[in-house]
Length: 114
Image (cartoon, rainbow, N blue to C red):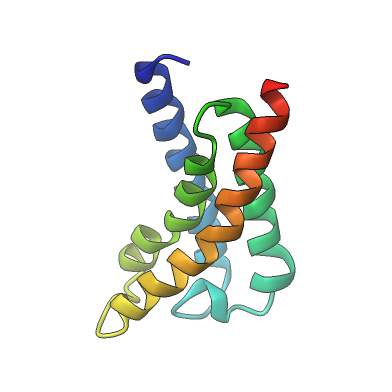
């Protein structure tokens, strides 16, 4: 992919991830998505799958797709009003959650290129 197509793909992935996390956030009556009952059993695993598919589509530097999908939770949390004194802690949690997502999307991208 060319740099312009890379950017376009990441923007599209970010938009899709924002919609996904907004749907998750609106369906759960909690301030942070990871406090929802189905986060660890449904929402996060689905986001890992979304990141892997996005990584396969992007191909080159695919790890970024998983990170974008996971980090898209932050603007959704802010928009839904859960930003506050714990925002810095939320960023640390999201960075931690981005590691497996980035690894899976990198693997998917590598497998796609072969």
